[in-house]
Image 1 (cartoon, rainbow, N blue to C red):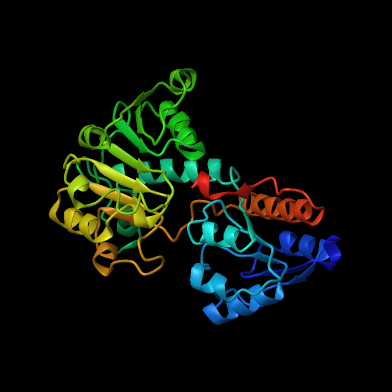
Image 2 (image 1 turned 60 degrees about the vertical axis):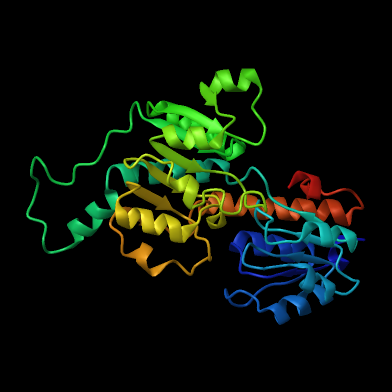
Length: 328
């Protein structure tokens, strides 16, 4: 299946370098605006494509896949997370799914540290104060936050990003703890100087900072539910750059309002861009518009991985970043 005869449909606008390279290699249909496709547009795209290049904004569930037709053979996801794709149903229909793992590791880990610092040092409040007309200058007791050196950081999910966070945290003098589906090898634990907790409840109750770095799966939905959030110390903060669904956002909002959790730094939200209005009003919450992987370098690298997966598939080989249900 020569590449130029492979019909590729892209669901969102991608960096210009990526779109140019796709046009050079494939018969590609690019998105002429940056709005997400409607479900009907997505079905039309899937019916006309050999390869679909979706993003996290495209919900490709069993109902959508049932309308895909027989032409589609590869979903080359632009992004590492594939919780928006029903991978098992796709495989049953003979459709391969690939992703772009490892590209956003450093960028997301950088953002975790930015949010940890931002919340503990009250940067969100400070920015608003400096931009207002009420700031009267420096005083010895104004805008006091907390020092992060010596604090305990609990990392929930110790994959690529979690480990990258651990390395950065050590440089800031944080004590690194973690909970993961599988314990790391002893030599990796030693390198990271990380303490493993088999019990998530026990870890959560003892941490000063909790960083969410696990994917969204059925088993991690509301993993940080109201009961588990209540285990956190009142002076603890929580940071999430992974998936919003991992935290019960309503419960978190109530606890932040009540002062039962000191602060939160959130780059992702349970309902996508529909953020709880009460959460937006809280001074102890820093909210970002899903910027964790938003570097030009990272987004271009993601595109390069997508292209490599498509080219390898077009040449009759297994895409290097093939996703199978057992990985999820």
